[in-house]
Structures are given as C-alpha cells and as structure tokens.
Length: 251
Image 1 (cartoon, rainbow, N blue to C red):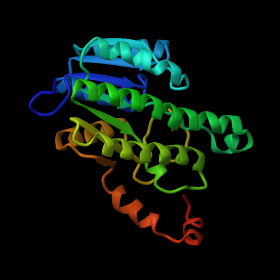
Image 2 (image 1 turned 180 degrees about the vertical axis):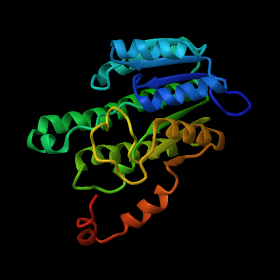
Image 3 (image 1 turned 180 degrees about the horizontal axis):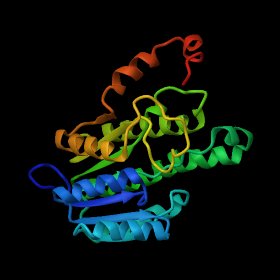
Image 4 (image 1 turned 60 degrees about the vertical axis):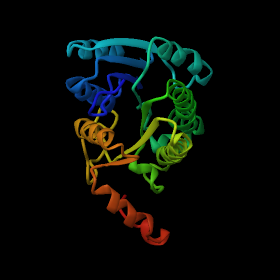
C-alpha cells in the first residue's frame, strides 16, 4: 500500500529501460518504494537497469514484456499482479521513429503507431483492470507535448502520442471513483539516448526533471502534468493558431 505521502511502496515499470522511468524509479526508491518490477524485452540493458536499482536497496525483478505482442499482455502482467499488489504502474515504453524514413516506408510508421498506441492501449487496459481489482493504485502514462498538435517534423510520432493521450484521459474518467488514479504526463523535448543527435528544442528538459514532476503529481493526485510547467500555456496558444500560420512556424 502507499505510505502517508501517497507515494508507492511497489512499482511496475512498463518499458523497463526507459531513462525517464528509471530516473523516476531512482527518485521513488529514495523516498519509500521497496519493490520494483521492470517489464521489457530481455536484454543486457534491462538487467543492468535492474542491478542499478538493486544497488539502491530495492527488491527488483524483471519480466519479459513486448509492447508489440498484445496477446501476451494479460498473461505476463497477470503474473506480476498475482505476486502482490502494485501501488503504481508507469507506462513508459515508446519509440520516436524517423519521420523522413517512416514517410517513405509505411511499415515503419505502422510500427511506431503499434508500439506507442496499440501496445499502450492493450497494456493500459490490462493494468487498469488489475489495479481496479485490487482496489487501489496509480497508472502514470508518459504522453508527450508532441501529441497536442500535429507538426510537420514529427506528425507520425505525434499522432501516436495524441491517441495515447486521449486514451489515457478517457481511461482516467472511466476509473474515477474506483480507487484507481490515472495521471497523464506531457513532457516536452527530453534529452535522452532516444533524442541524441536531434536539434535541441525550446523548453528541453531531462529525465530527472520529469521524475521530479511525476513525484509532485503523485503527491497532489494530479490528472495531468506538464514538464516543464510553462508548456501548458505555450501549447494552449499554439493549439489555437490558424493552420496557415502554424505551418509557417519553425517547429
């Protein structure tokens, strides 16, 4: 169960090698989290991530999870929840893709959509049902500012995040009053391995800053978290620009 500060004692990470997820796990372990499940494709990176968290004193377990295999999600995640209650699940998997290549090769674009949206819908529903069955818990979904409005530079990735964001909001409404809390996190450009080599954007942030915002959101029982917070106002303005104006912006 959660402690008096509303922070989790047990954590499930869907996307166990995500830098944002691991920064969040580090922060929560430093507060009170004691059990962590890292779900992801078996790899040396996944095992290394587990070892780094064990070094902080947490009981860390790994489980093979593939976002692109939704038929396995109930079985895989069912084993996790059968082992004990999960106070917080962090849905953190996703791929950026390569816009130029993905436009020329539709199969690559489909993979982005299936990972970021279809896989998340499946895993999110399975996780939400398990949290509802146990009667408590938080589902934190890593969305993106990119989903707020389609940009020429990344509309394939952005559209997948837009779908995920809408899904997570609706799921939160569906679970309202059940004891399960859904929080959507919308970071801007995050400096990680996934974005290495890309031009740095305004309001760029770090995995550690996102982790800090997630902790604060959990304490406040927030439904939506922007990182950095100023992006809430920026995107509100951009969302209402006429398309003829918006498409001329260097975004």
